[in-house]
Length: 282
Image 1 (cartoon, rainbow, N blue to C red):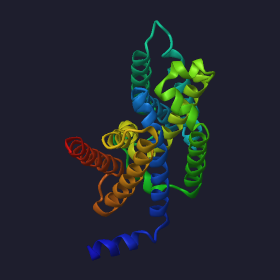
Image 2 (cartoon, rainbow, N blue to C red):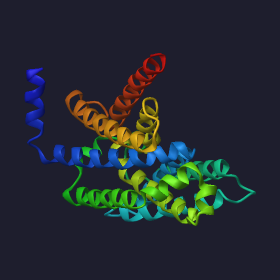
Image 3 (cartoon, rainbow, N blue to C red):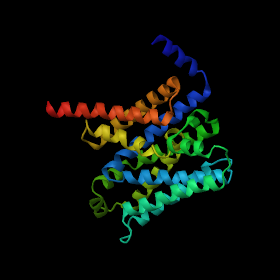
Image 4 (cartoon, helix red, strand yellow):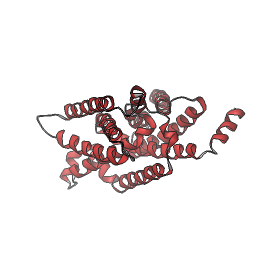
């Protein structure tokens, strides 16, 4: 144990480790807050669909050799979020079908682009890193860290400022409309925030693991608590703790960051599930 603490103290002297921890905690906090709403509104599939869109956008940015890939990935993912929200209301194309159509097309298109216009001798490695995460979270520049910080602060401020409206449309959208809440506007805001979180999380967990990163903390908190506020607070705490533990464990053990964080989230879910069962029995 002492040797592990000394090793962690040594690693913490390096800026890239501190950058990874800062960005990882911010992403975990933002994703857990929106995860509760996504689960309760049964919108979790939107996060999965947008993660595939982000992969396709990243492939486009790679082919274009963009110096800052965020300038390509973020706008395209935001556009897809708006399209999914609008298309999901079309009676001819139901919400789940629209998500499946856009996400699968983006995934296939991205993989096709990366193969046809390959800019790297190891295409398979690049695709695997993008899908499942890599050590890119440990190679963040100061500019990328500040970009993540500002976007995360914007997400947290929006969630805090519109908390009551988000609460209203989460539990009873029809009633919220009846009392004058513009539910369409707030649903659009949620879709945009989800897109921002997914783009931020790609470096940490990869595009295929993002949905687990968003959903697990909310599901874990719901095993123990019942009120929206309690579930949201517990989800945020669990997500931050699992992110910190996962990143530190991956640094010490040399395992993939994204997979390690998701494994921590899954372990937390099992513990919360057991605690909930014991509580129900008692």
